[in-house]
Image 1 (cartoon, rainbow, N blue to C red):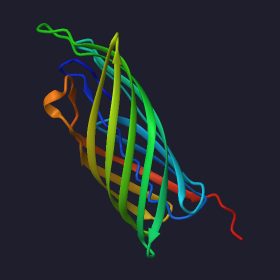
Image 2 (cartoon, rainbow, N blue to C red; image 1 turned 30 degrees about the vertical axis):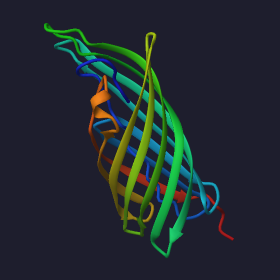
Image 3 (tube, helix red, strand yellow; image 1 turned 180 degrees about the horizontal axis):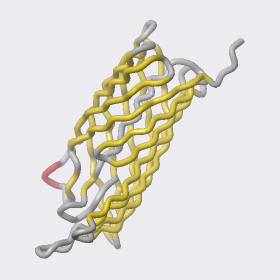
Length: 213
């Protein structure tokens, strides 16, 4: 998820979960690959207006020629409100908390950049869009607060992350594409680098677990 106090280690936003839930009992699962690594996501509609989500992000990259590596594990959970706007329109707002662990080494002959940290993240994420049998589209903005810990150091940072998400397929299985950007609220005060681009592709499946009457 993020790096700290180094050149190459960066904050890497995970995929924004945009379920666009429709009805009670709807269960979604999705798997993505992109700049943040491997990102699994799940969402479930507890009622016709209350949903929950579980998101993860994992990466394990190694450069054998330089002995450099990057490893991170991130998991977060959230709860939110959703509603229909007409037949196809959707509005939802989710908020939640996550925790991350990261290790990386991007050292070379000129510098040593080693990171070993953990962090907490809080977010709130409103989204608006539409969901049909063939296509889902949405615009979301995730507001993020990071609290980062390394050794005896602690640092807080804030980001705004707008994304667009498109899902194409038929009813229960769709291919997913997401593109967005991560903007620090106070970029001149940042003491670590970050990944400004959110880009991922994946596949999503959904079922309705509520028995039909």
